[in-house]
Image (tube, rainbow, N blue to C red; front, side):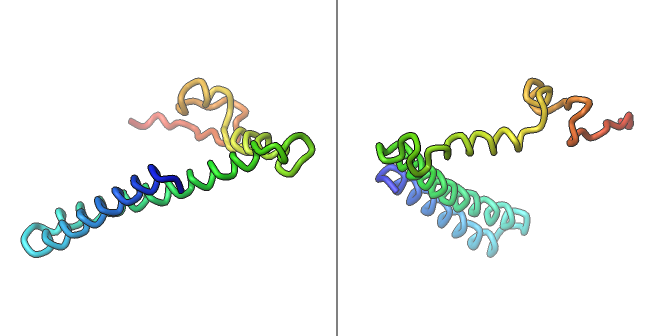
Length: 118
């Protein structure tokens, strides 16, 4: 993990600790909904730390693929193609892409019939 990612993760953890401490203080003096709100908010920065570590791993893997030894025919030569293929396979259909996820093609297996109920 580089220096900026480490600093950002430390900031996330400090924010999470502060929100958790606020939840403890709210437990003594405030209504239960406020305690739940602060407790849930204290988990969000922890999720961000996990995301930063995943991004760091992805950057490291990308740097590994870009090395001269990973050229054509080397280890990881088709890794980028495999990543793109996997991402496109998880996508739905052409209409889903162009309608920002609101419509599906008629032959799309993930199409959910719309009801007329309001």
